[in-house]
Image 1 (cartoon, rainbow, N blue to C red):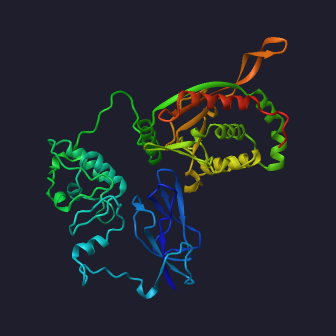
Image 2: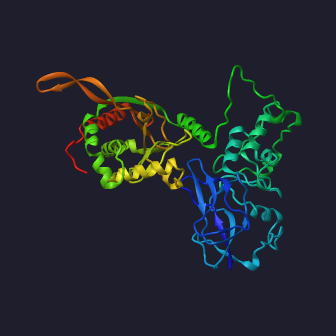
Image 3: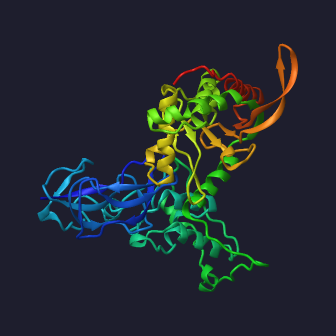
Length: 461
């Protein structure tokens, strides 16, 4: 029998860490292959981590609410059959079940080098102070510190409440709140990407003393007048709020509007929906019809399917459509239809329904929300006629679909103009004015409307 390392899985592009929400197993518990060991969360989606082998949990290396980098060992499992786990990590003989502590000073090394070797994760762009007290700082903590002008020397002085004294987001925010009560003192900020902070300079940076009387716990609680209810944001709502604000700060938002007559589309769906559900076992909604039209127009206007990297425009050849989906708790998530342009209407229907059901039941995988190149949000589901959506970074456009309403409109016929009752719908698209000008944004939106109005009502499916 052997010990198998369970590691934090890779959770998609650009995601370097995840938060442990809950351990479903504890040391001594038996676990089956692919059985859920823990639940984790990223800024994109909640997910589950299954066991790579069948065996007994030997050790849990992190606590709940800890932020863990990808590929870090999070637990050890004693395999029942001694086989290698599916994650391909090396196994440890049972005889070596108790890990040996690394020596502080090797024959050819120094104590500082040994201490540095114990740091489980260290971003490449940060140089840790050369002291015996080297600590792990998550990218989130480092970003907060850099934004607030906290030097590495000062960061070393912040008491940590996390695992093994790790400084958490809460710790650094409390330190900042307490520091603001003191007179401003110039401290060098953490180096930008690619810049090393000399150890002597970091040590020489003045440290701010925080008197106990100014701790956040002792500060007066804000008072709210009137009859109010105070609700703490949940983790996902905080992430949504953060992303929305960052998107507005990143992109120059412009929104264009148009309306389209979808009477033919409505009548065609009404005619085929019962037969389609009987044959395919799926309900056909309007969303696959809308997305099909959008895909055709993206091929004509590829710049709306791009992203910005500094002064470079990255035109995406893959068409991966994100669709905003409402969760039971009121939050929103954006699962992605990968390679949507390769799916026919039946394939789009099944993919959309599958992702929507997974979102409602909290069964989305991390990869299900990654790689989107263009986003669609159906605000009409909630009765809205139109909206001004916020761009889902790093994309450059998001299209909102309003509610379908019957209205009297002027219809042009060979016999002249007449007034008829039609199914009308507003479309609105927010786009990044850094690269998508009004002409391109309006032309694309108009093309989508014409594609929907020209829907072939004689088509079969």
